[in-house]
Image 1 (cartoon, rainbow, N blue to C red):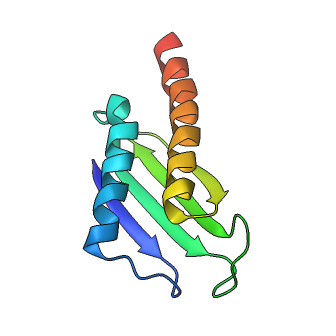
Image 2: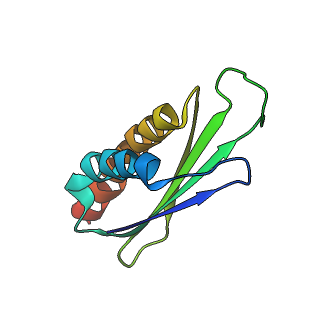
Image 3: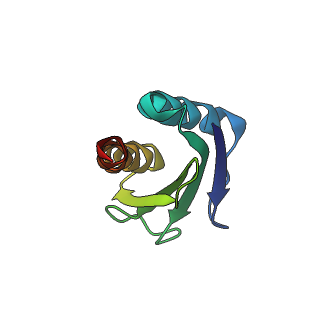
Length: 104
């Protein structure tokens, strides 16, 4: 499973910030790791320098082998919280999708 990060021009994502996010995503999606070929994480700060509630956005798109991508979005006060919320939403979507695949 390849994890790729994309950020807007307001965010600099160093290796020390990237490592815990990779760990959070990998651990959260471990159940689906054999089926996922790629995970794209898009991080943005919707209000730039202004400090507002829920202005950090995380959109995660995953590609299941042989299927269309699934994407979820989450907003939070920090990027870590946004990623964590997006992973939870993604797990719900993947559980539904994989469950449907098993029923056919």
